[in-house]
Amino acid sequence: TSHYPQVEPLVSFDAVLELPRGEPSSVHSYGKAASQFAELWLPQPTTAPAPLVIFIHGGCWLSAYSIEHSHALATALTQSGYAVWNIEYRRVGETGGGWPGSLEDIQAAIDLLYQLQAPEVDLQRVAIAGHSAGGHLALLAADSSQQKVAAIGLAPIIDIAEYASG
Image (cartoon, rainbow, N blue to C red):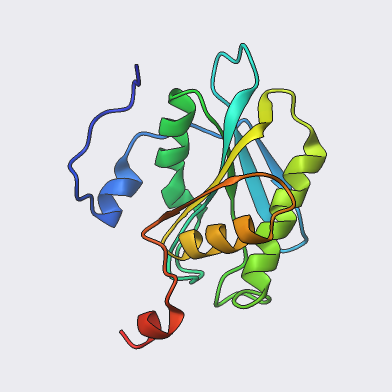
C-alpha cells in the first residue's frame, strides 16, 4: 500500500508544489550546464532490482518550470516500488534550450543512466514517461531509443503547430 495521500482529481500547480516529497538517492550531471542533471530515486528498502520510470517534467519547454514540480510524483512512484530517473534539461530561456537541445539533453541523460549500471534498477523493465512538454520529449526519446522501453505521454503536447496557435 502507498503512504502517499489521495488528492483531488484536478490539482492546481501550486497544490502540486505543496504535496509531500522525499529526496533523490543521488544526483548525476550529464553536461556542463546547471540544468543538465538527473536524479535517481530508489524505493526503500530495495530487495530486488526495481522497475524504472524515466520521467521528464513538463512546463511548456520554458525555463520558468523546473524539475521541482515532479518531486511529488517521484516520491509517490518510489513509495509504490519503482525506481525513478528524473531528468532536468535545458529549456527555452537557457543557452542551448529549445529545439533540438532539449531533446539532446534527454537523450544524453538516458545514455548516462545506462552507463551507471545501478544494481538497484532493472534496466529490462523501463518506461519513459513525461507530462505536457515532457510527454512530447518522452515520446521522441522512446522512439529514438536503442533500448526496449515503454512510452507514456501524460497530456503530451504532440501537435506543436496547434499548440502554438493557442
